Image 1: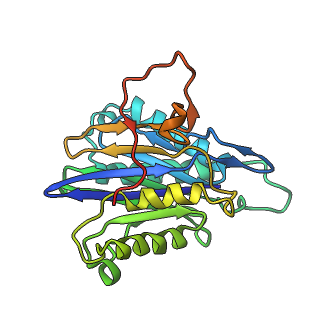
Image 2 (image 1 turned 90 degrees about the horizontal axis):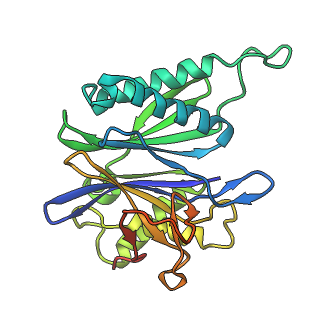
Length: 262
C-alpha cells in the first residue's frame, strides 16, 4: 500500500510545499520501485496516490497526459483552483466509462484509492493541498481540502497524510513537534517527512516501504524533484522516484542527504 505526506515548510518568511511518499507496490509481493508522486508538467503542482495501483495508475497517467495536451491547462491559463475541477471531471468521466461488469452488477466496486493534489495558487497567493477521495454513496470522486489544524496546531500548520496509518502518522507528527516544543510555533519544517521515513523503516509496517520520493513546489511556480541516498548516504546508492539509479545514470537533480531536522 502506501503512505503519502504533503505539507508546507516554513522558515522565516519563506514557504515551500513538499509532497512525499514511499515506493512500495504490494499485492502478494513487495516491489519497491513504484512511482507515486507525479509532476503534472505545469510547474505549480504535483499529484500523488495511495491505494490500488489498478485504479491509480490509469487515472494519474491520463491526467498527466490531459494536462500536457491541453494548451490552457499546460500553460496555467487554467489556474490551480480551476485545475482542481478539471481533475475531478477527468477522474469521474473515466470512472463512468468502466464496462463489462459481472452479471447483475450495475456499478464498479468502490475505488480503493485516494490522491493528494497539491501546488501553488496564483489566484489565492497560497499553497493548496487537496485530498481526492472516492465517495461510495455517490459513486464518484470528490475533493476535500487539507486541515490547518486549528484545534491542535494553532491554525498555522498545513499538512495532510493519506494511505495506510494516515491518522497514526498525523499523531506521530504532533509527537515530534511536541518533543521539539514546536506545537505552538508557526509552521513546520520536515516533520511529516521524518514520520514517513520512520514508518518505511518500521518492520511492523510491511505495507509501507522502499525509498522515499519527494517533490518540492516553489511560490515562483517551479517544481523540484529530489534524488535520495538510500538507505543511507554511506551506501552511496542514489534513488529517484523510488528506483535506485544505475551506476552510469547521472541526473542534474539535488540529493536529499538529511533525514532528521531537529
